[in-house]
Amino acid sequence: MEVYNRKAKFNYFIESEIECGIELKGTEIKSIRKGSVSLDDSYARLKNGEVILTNMYIAKYEEGNRFNHEERRERKLLLHKNEIRKISRQVELNSYTLIPLKLYLKNGKAKILLGVCKGKKLYDKRETIKKRDLERERRY
Image (cartoon, rainbow, N blue to C red; front, side, top):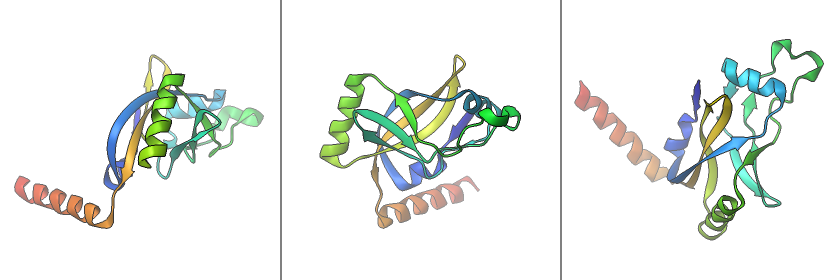
């Protein structure tokens, strides 16, 4: 089961990628295994020496009754301290953004592929659209 953030490659230049774990509650992992998750409009930020994932949607688990989770709560990403330091330097010095690119299961655990990204300008996006259209015409 893999969920991609399709808007990320269109809106950002991806400089590097980091695999990290995600801190979840019991009903959240069940919803992820079911595929009820969306990475659209989500991002990560640094807060008190931790990386926090904001605005990721995980649907409520129908059989979860009163133990269900909040759908768009902030979730902590699990990284080593040296990885967090490296990311924080890039974010502060080069004004990069942390965007989740992919959510997948690895050995029964949910993992996020976090991209260190730089935002595209409007003319960069037009160039991307132009390349995509030319490639589509070549195929036919």
